[in-house]
Image (cartoon, rainbow, N blue to C red; front, side, top):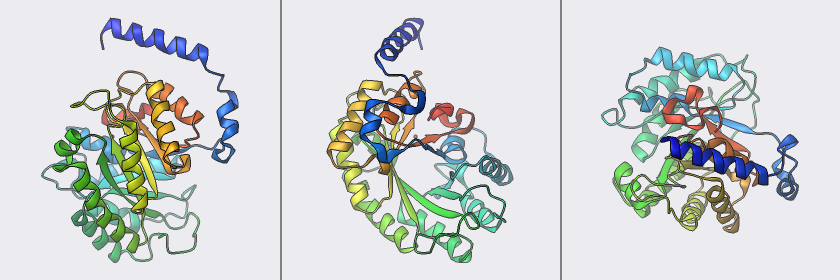
Length: 309
């Protein structure tokens, strides 16, 4: 970032903070309008997947398991642990089947809170690979079809990822947005048949490296609405490029609300590329969002960097 851009960002942030209420206790006017949100914030740790897949060094299965276990010991409730994708394209996520199998073989009786392992499964082939492991580990994990078991058995969640722009979708998914959404319907349907929770990511919601700043928030809301209608339990809105600003974050969340999407069904996934993740998180908190993605040590290119792909 250039010196001039840093100075501009600092000046803008200082002016924005002067105009905002103090955050002590989150007792803002808009919070009073969304009492159901509460003050409890849930963090979804994405480092072992979204973080490590962007590292050049291939991390061993043992090290991945150790990282996940250390993160679980901190009290995190959801950890993204791997991805069922082609090792040809994402070699860092190879052997995610072994990671899932070993995680489900562990004794979780001392886990401080109920824990859910999340795995990216962007197509039916990936979900099929995950399902083979799950069939071998029946009874070792919690499903949505069973009564709550407390912290004794972990939950398993699968995730799909869409894009908010056509160019990003074609570059990352090799298809347009409409085709990707049709494909996700089958993944979500089959995942629900296995009793799994489903998370859906939408990338580049606040700026695209190919199409620029002007990502249509109404289009994002339409994609989110369709994913929820297909059965997704949660939508994670990703500022993949870190181009998001407080005004545009607020505008996006207003579009989501106008589309009838509850703040409880949303998570925010901010990158801190230009130092805006923290202020964008504050805007989302004020709008009632209480789930944020984070990445240990800023793995993955400042995914929250402790503030919030």
